[in-house]
Image (tube, rainbow, N blue to C red):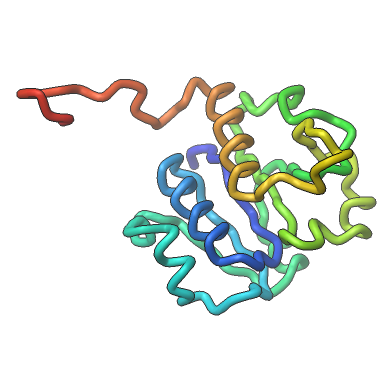
Length: 169
């Protein structure tokens, strides 16, 4: 089994965010895991539009609840939260193992009890907490997955495009 960076969304509420995250997952070969309930139907046109035509290139799994996901997860879990003490750039994602990055609901984050039980797995992105409650979840997913990929020397991704006859190959 090849190690991967997995993106986990806990009860996503905004279809456009989920669509943008799906596009990032397709671009980075990251499986997407969605823990229900979702705040919109899975066939929401806004979500489909944000993800463009990449849905067939996506490895996506749905879970009925957090417990089901935790039972099936097979790797190292990281919780991305503004309440974490450790900064994401201090974490070592270079080890050859599955990394699961969990992001909470846009309106409530991850469940407080779950965060307390797994506080040692929590990572934060530094920001000005005085003026902004949170960053957009699709932006944070992109930041975290690309930091992991940077530490992994962008394994499996194209670093250079080749041109042929003045056109992208």
